[in-house]
Image 1 (tube, rainbow, N blue to C red):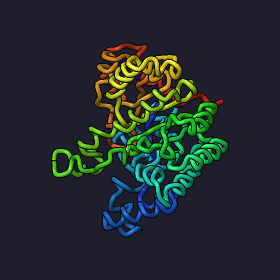
Image 2: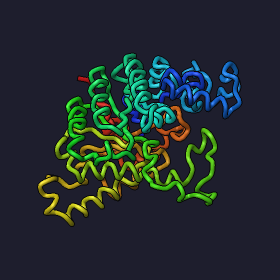
Image 3: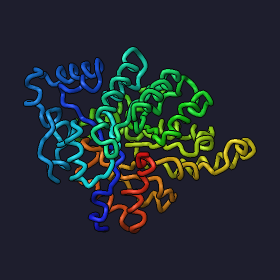
Image 4: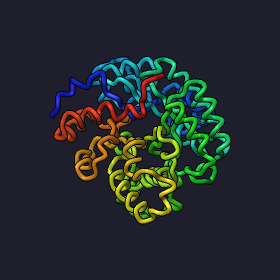
Length: 383
């Protein structure tokens, strides 16, 4: 294996989360956060004053002890740096991380991406929280603003507002056709233009695929698929794990084939916490489609789809995926990025070591890309 000391202090991590304690959700999500808090208290039978004591290992206040042991082994809201910006910076120091993309708690993200009366207010509330959080260290803490795209005019206004205030990333739902149109529709170009010109990445993340499949019945009645995951260990069930990449790869296909990356060559796009095994087969299939309809795509695309993916897309594989095998089969080594999913258990307890074991046989140059330079596309230096 490679000596990882060479990367300490230089790592770029494309998947962190802000994990509130049970009584902090309203601060990050407004009314939606209050509803999350009430739901958690009802689920666990908690009196608000007793919440931190009874479920500290899941939903309590963050630890103030910053060591290799606590940072990597305590999960959830009790992890050091789970919630506070000052604590997160100390956690990054222990991890050896230079910059991190940071996302909302999944429950807040789902509220903010949804239609209905709470969607847009939750988006705006979170985005204001994210801007304040980023202000602690704008270079190292890159908290993703949320973009609700059910209405394109509202989405465009929010991009303009939050970019002006200093946003450094946006996450949107991969399951939503923006304004009920293709993401490659010219009506979306002003949004892509604003993000491209600002060098601010647009991201899709697990949780944003909800609603992509027309029916929820596919796993119904099959215990091996539709089991209730064990909290803070399994994360999701087998059915969700086998299907959540459908929406992100579909969204990316529309961007590539619709010429968005042709029109906006500097648009930075990331698919986060949806695995990496789908990327190579997608590149292969899209190249085949464009060859098949070459006359139709000649006015739209000047490169192969796989070349747009290599240039514009970054993905974060899970710590247990055979990333080296993916690269052996399909190339695209420029696309895969290190992530820890801190402080969620899905990221594992030793992701750096896990990825090192997997990718070290490809050599120093590939490891440098995976742990450091590939992610700079999503974490660019500030102007």
